[in-house]
Length: 131
Image (cartoon, rainbow, N blue to C red; front, side, top):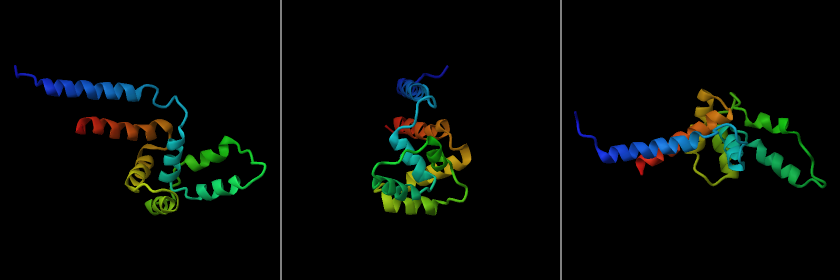
């Protein structure tokens, strides 16, 4: 019987613990603001910033139903990584690689909350392994 490496076992424990903590109620919680921003950017909806700028000038502010914003959270098949890039150039200072990867992830696995959070979960587990 081969001798077990204690460092490997410890790493496996940390990865499984990280997985368990991250999978806990993955899709049952509502979206956070940064997650909404990621959705908007990764789906290439650059028009969101123009919309937000226009309603910021309204007095009194308009009230919108949640259904309006749900359309902006859907992955529009007509949008390309170029749309994602141009949206980021005008609105954000982050490099576009994460949003490009998320764009393709959403095309493959869907644009529901669990699928999008799973991408970050995988990146988080990769971080544990790299550390």
